[in-house]
Image 1: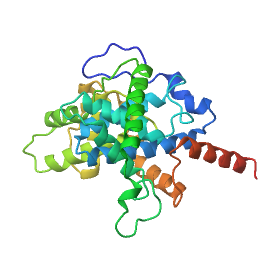
Image 2: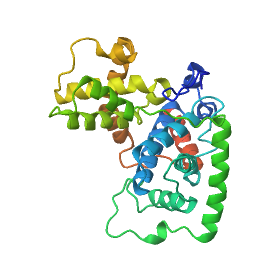
Image 3: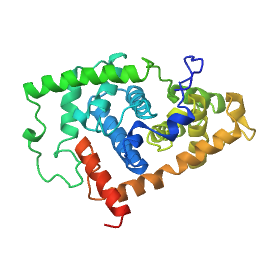
Image 4: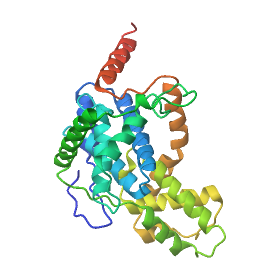
Length: 301
């Protein structure tokens, strides 16, 4: 991450060299496949946080943390830490950020939720619809498995902390966006609540972006872009002056972020269609198999 002077409102951003390559790509994982696995991992973490009844800010912090972990040549490799890897890169990030908050979760709770989400009983990773009541045996975590997974979870947590230099600060744009919105529009405005909800939805969408918006832009820029786009979508009129400059956001940055957010719906549809009835590779073995399949397709075999 770039060596910037951190404040409570700023984040360490990914450097150009970190964005240009990753440990996974150095281990022969194709960039498109890496994006697909990361996207699946983000959805997995979001679902786990919801089942654990964690606030969205903790879930978002966990997503940003493990996304940081994957970037750069010094980061984690999907050939060594498959997205499943006892689900532990994602699970460890969620466990870590929850532990640092007012909503800590036990390792058993974290592992039970991930065991369910990664089982055939869950529609999240299983492309085939689950018919009838799921069999609890497919996601049951025995005591022996739990102890093994717990040890790996704690080791993975330590590994993430070492890779990130023990930098766990994540400044999110949620509260900032509401503060900005109140400066632009009175809270008594009839559309204020619906506009605020749409702003939060845009910020959640940005977490899924293949352009890693939370790693390349500071929270004020994300907040302003979400407000700008949400206002256009809901038809709420904002001041006609260049109000974003008040929040230290330049027109060029605003334009880039708005375009990135607008493209997310179409990109997500293409991503879902690409895998269709196939399962996104989640283990090291599955990643290796998919890489080999893609290489064979490139050779025309």
